[in-house]
Image (tube, rainbow, N blue to C red; front, side, top):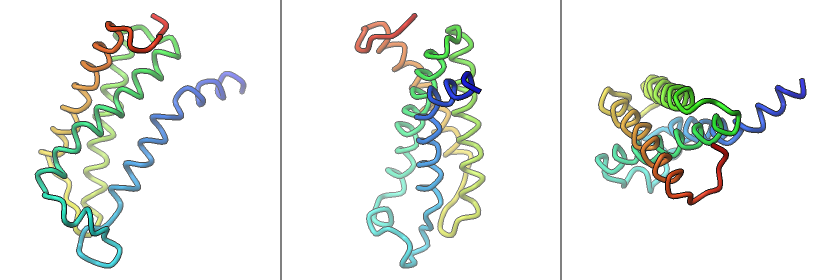
Length: 135
């Protein structure tokens, strides 16, 4: 039980961020009163491009979490990239059920691109020792 709690503490930030992504992607964009005005006015191309930093950050959160759990570098990259990418696919499917939202292959590709860029940024940060990490 104690080991499970320790693991949950170390993966809480990516899980919480995934919940935030889910909540945001559950907001209808059909012009109803429930639709936030700032999102409705945002250019669709900008909305699409926001997938990249969003999923890069999610991947970085997973990378730090798995690193803290002692995963090998390859295992860390594999699981972080896989979880982030699969979550992106499921979130796009989820959005097809939300009024005014659309899930598509382009968005999935942007999510995967973000995950890949998150790995590159994570490696850059580790090499430059911006944050103290255990290797």
